[in-house]
Image (cartoon, rainbow, N blue to C red; front, side):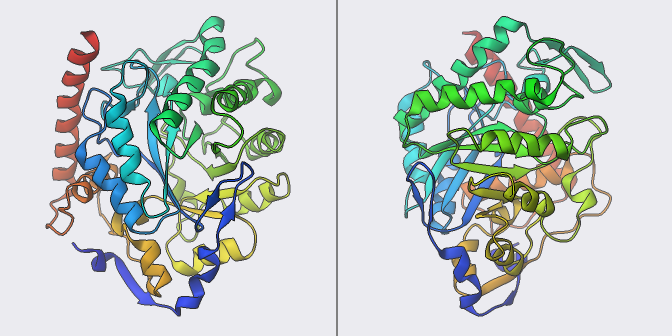
Length: 408
């Protein structure tokens, strides 16, 4: 499949004008346009927490394609909290030069490359980690211990150290990941967070750790370095984070030194609905973004569900959001911003899969990213089952590498 396989339709180039106006963030950094590559778990780390040549090339391709910024999904500061063995780990033991090379690859052509600061918490990968969350849970597909109060109080500085190292390595900003069921999202969710101390109970307490992390990161990187926060509009789980509570978090973040609020939704909790289940047509969580706009003056980014130039243009033009976050769309067409600016690819033609095995679609897109990074994206594709088998085999190999490396 070639990029043209995923594109349909044309539009006057002027239709994209609003997407190509610069945006000045509160810290003073100027983004060249309104299109961002949203964070995805590309699983392209080498199993020792370091970037690979394919990963460098992948982010270079998105920079060449015209995005204002790209976000690298799930960069951990510790080796025991990763979501997958292909994640990156940036700490004092990391090879700084390899991270500097990645930063240079993704920072060309006026694009920025930002680290998404991650901690999987209860969803940490059991073959390499001991999952720990706000509260102990023993559920089908999810078993974790509870973090101690001392462990919680150490977390803000852990995030801050990774942010400081990222800045020093040449990355253009950081995003604090408080969505999709990972640790900071778990603290916000009453389903995960059943604590009875200062970090549990009412939303004022459940948002406490996120605020502490933001403040520690800001102190570490200074006033002119961009800090984004990724926040769920909803967990899409019964008993999880409600939109009412999410809006209260938005209002609280308006008082913090945050430069960009990335709105998404859903969680990787076993059996949870996908974001697309309730919003098959059009951007997900756009209605929430419109409500959030009434609660904050922060620049808003909306990630998920954009399938056309007109949807992206309209969301920015109406003032609901400032930046469009694209993930799978840019996995299909890495130079989509250039295409839109020229009036091409007005509609994205996403591949359709019938009777997909569990995890098969995610595996297909992840292996698509591998092909992009290896400049092999014009090769023919196999089945979802083949993609899933390749994906799982790579995870097994990198798990073995991870254990050997970090044990030593």
